[in-house]
Length: 78
Figure 1 (cartoon, helix red, strand yellow):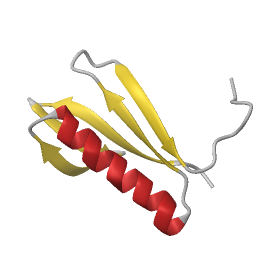
Figure 2 (cartoon, helix red, strand yellow):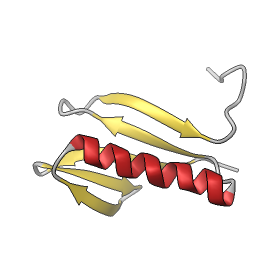
Figure 3 (spheres, helix red, strand yellow):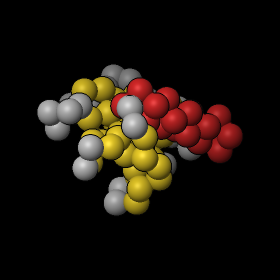
Figure 4 (tube, helix red, strand yellow):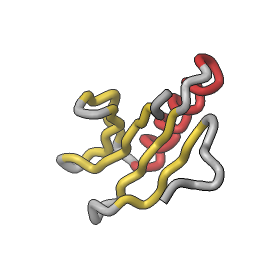
């Protein structure tokens, strides 16, 4: 099953939690957006056994971190 991702990005001066092109919620701080994204991604794994993840973008537009929940391949691909 493919991993379902949430993304935290800065858009128009607010931190946005989104999935694909759909905005889930807006936050005034990155920390709030990360906390909610992690909560939702973790819940997908714990309640539905669906592999999920959270990708976090910095103010500079570069990806800072990625968190995964559920089964990860070992050894990692790539």
